Amino acid sequence: MNSDELMAQASEATGLDDFGDPAFRAGLDHYVAALDDEAQLNELGGVALGPAVVAALTNRLKVVDWTRRHPEVLDERIEAPVVVIGMFRAGTTFLSNLLDRDPANRALLAWESGDSVPPPTPEERRSGPRVEAAQGGVDMLEMLNPEISKIHHEGAADATECIAVMGQAFQSISWEAIANVPSYGAWWRAADNAPAYAYHRTVLQVLQSGGVRGRWTLKSPHHALALDALVDTYPDARPVLLHRDPVVLTGSVCSLISTMSSTFSDADHRDYIAAHWTDTLEESVTRIDDFRARRPEHAILDVQYADLARDPVGTVESLYVALGLEPGTGAFDAMAASVADRPRGAFGTHAYDVAQYGLDEGALRERFAGYSERYGVEPERPGAVTG
Image 1 (cartoon, rainbow, N blue to C red):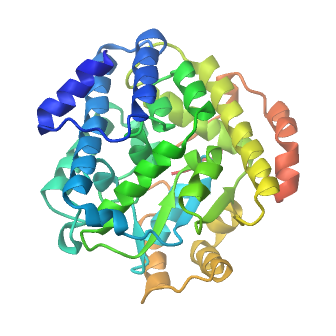
Image 2 (image 1 turned 90 degrees about the horizontal axis):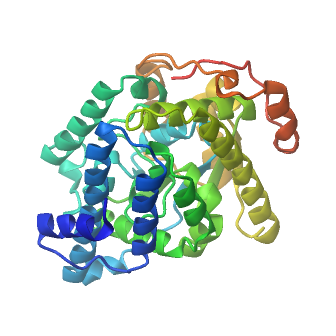
């Protein structure tokens, strides 16, 4: 792959050539090089990941063009977003979907994160040709690798993670999730993430300018690794941190990454996945604790996964009280109905075991003992099933 060629393809598809802040180019170059040198792509990976990069560049071109033609969009205010910052595999998707049931909230949906222009109107936000096209892509991926839906099912009209938008700035953990690219991961974590968050804010401004407004509810474990950039971009953000047994988190994230990246590579990456993603969990904890010590004025609300699993709606109600949020009409009833309509395991069961990645439960418990003690995290049975 070649960055110039991929950019040219995006320009040819759109008739546009202004990609905005050129800071994205460093990430693009690092990622493309890592795909060639490290990812060991199979035939499908070689065919599919180039177009995935072009799709990200295409949406970026459209966003930049839209703001040029509609400069008033940049006056849109993104006020006090609720941001679920992690931990990895700790129920962030479940919580995000519950928050999306509140009519007072405005989640980032999967389809619009990759097809942001023109911004959706209220009538077309959950249905229409663009939603159907995006759902076709979801269905195709799950057909190619059915295990994905068991681990992390996300429909086109579901709330999604911010990583798809960050990916259009090429500073995103999303690119690491679909291909094993150590040098790219090391680069973006050490880089200044401000340009990616500036672009993220622009996308939110564009999306809400179409008339779908409300209190933004966002989520991604990516944010735990870039908290300074997050709060510098959104000074009134209200971060929420979910806590879960780190042994379960480790097993689950290793399983997720193995499943996703195996779609595009036939190589055995288990040793790398085990080391890298365990390190990522530890780095997330370290960066969060460091941020809390340095910037105590930006409070983070802690929520236990065990509480969310036992009493989903009650836990969200407590979250609202703690953050001083006013629920929309029928919000908690809608959340309760969502829990009843989509029970855990609705898309199949997901079993995982840290031993299959060469990891030892006792060693993991010792490694994360400080985290578990600090936050009062309940231990779970290893190999637990999630859905």
